[in-house]
Image (cartoon, rainbow, N blue to C red; front, side):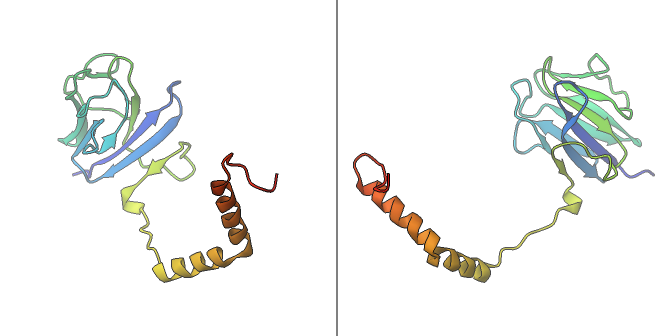
Length: 165
């Protein structure tokens, strides 16, 4: 059986360029809405808190409208038909549009401003010792000390201007 893969691309107002992307591997349900609990969160007045669900069933994806403003697929409300490569989901009458893909993008295909793949996310760790050492170097520098003096001068003058001008 085929393993589920889904790429959703938020399209620009012209409907051609990807503005943001979400990649889902091995998930059988993807939720879309305004609420932070959704997999795809979109801040738009036409998007409900829980607007739509994409469901992997019988080897294909379908869309279920769960929000007040509905979903348009191929110009009409979805009717449990399978999604096909390149389908556009219109959220609400004038809301955002999401392009559906089942093929992972190659690095040369990515033309959006933001791409998020949770599987490839690097976890960053903060070295507190190095942070404190670098902070001390900055604080002790002549330049930083001069900025601190200027700030104090401005705070003590009633007009807020520094004494150098």
